[in-house]
Length: 59
View: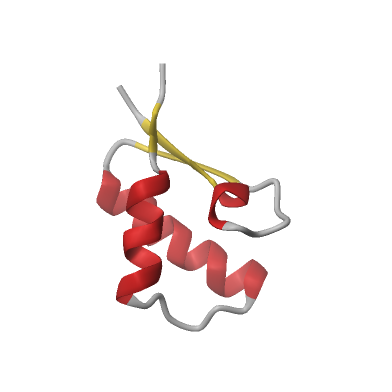
């Protein structure tokens, strides 16, 4: 069973959806997305905690 993250759940006006097999993959992809799309240079520990709490199980 995979995991997913909706960018909108983190407070962004964004339709981005991240799909991955693990929490660590979600965080890595979210970091790349945040840098490319939202100009967030580095994820803080607070941001990572917020990402972890917003991750959903797929299926």
